[in-house]
Structures are given as structure tokens and as C-alpha cells.
Length: 224
Ligand SMILES: [Zn+2]
Ligand SMILES: [Zn+2]
Image 1 (cartoon, rainbow, N blue to C red):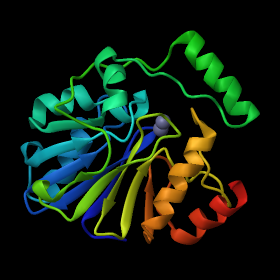
Image 2 (image 1 turned 90 degrees about the vertical axis):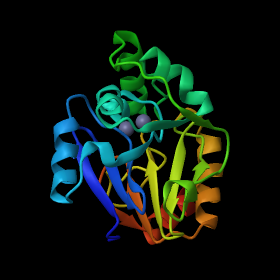
Image 3 (image 1 turned 90 degrees about the horizontal axis):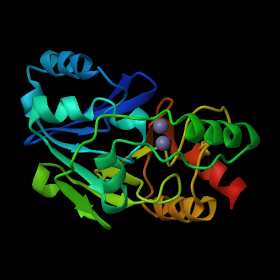
């Protein structure tokens, strides 16, 4: 496990805190009312919410942006999101992706009907289109565009070894990391092939625990 990447469970989903030379980068913002939990972890590191300089949102689903509005206010950090997710962030509404199997197809339909998935709207400071270098934020790393789960899903690669992948990969099942929801299944596999080229060792998903390259490659071989 990488020492500079810390997984934080924020209700239904994981967020990740990355220690850089210029403070901290937070990836995703979990469910609502989770600011205290992030603050506690920072205090353990002799830091404060104000030391978060950048918040990267892997994709705009309610379970990844719940505490974002409160965090923006308390940290003053810049918010980064892919340009195609910007409108959802500003509307404060999740556009639920289609299910990839029967049960998740039903859940997706129901969720859109009852319109669960509202959150406090936020205006991003940085929108990206494709690769984005994180050097200016104090760390060897880059953001890549990996559409599929949503059109504007992004992954963060740190030191060419670790990838924080949001919901592009899920770690819920023993033999698969395929996500139960995806807007575009074809595009998802294309993005997986792109991820494969980076040859990362450790995968840090939005749901479930950290896993290794083997599990990713095995699922990819089954699905493509
Ligand atoms: Zn999620
Ligand atoms: Zn999602």
C-alpha cells in the first residue's frame, strides 16, 4: 500500500487523500456530512482542511460529491472535474447510468424515476478535456479521461504505480471488477485498455478495497 495515498470511507463510497509537496489533494467527496471525518484524518497528520489545495471529482454521482459543497467552503480548494460532468455538478443532480446486468438495470430505472441522487450544487474551478499533469499541484501524477461508467469519468495515476479509478472499476465481487452501472459498455472497455497501458500495480476503487493488477487483467480478458 502506498504511503502517500490514504483511503477514506465516506458512507457508500471511498475518497482518497494524497499527500503532496504542496499540501493535500482529495479525490472524491463521498456522501453528505463527511467533512468531520476528513478533518480528523488531517489533524492526525498535523494538517488542517485548509491544507487541501485541490479536489478532483472522478465523476458526478451523488455518492462521490455529497460533501463537496461543504468541503469547498471549508478548504478553499480548487475543484476539478471533466468538462462533460460540469453541468451535472452545477445542477446538483445525478444522471444515473444504465445497469450492466438485470438487477442494476432495474435499480437504475427506479433511481431515475424517484430521482434520488440530489446533492448541493457546486461550480468547478478547473475543467479538463483530456490528460492533465499534476506536477503543478506538487506530485508526479496525471489525470486521464476514461469514459464508460459516465461520459466524463476520469482516473488519477500517481507515480506510474497507483491508479485511483472512481467507478470505472468496482471491487465488490471476488472474481470481477466490472462496474454494475455504465453509460457506455463499449467505451468502458476502451478505457480499460487505455488504463492497461499504464501498467499500474495498485488500483484504488470508488467502492471496495484496493486490488492488484491481476484482478483487473483477468476481468478485462473476460469482457473483451
Ligand atoms: Zn459510486
Ligand atoms: Zn458512479
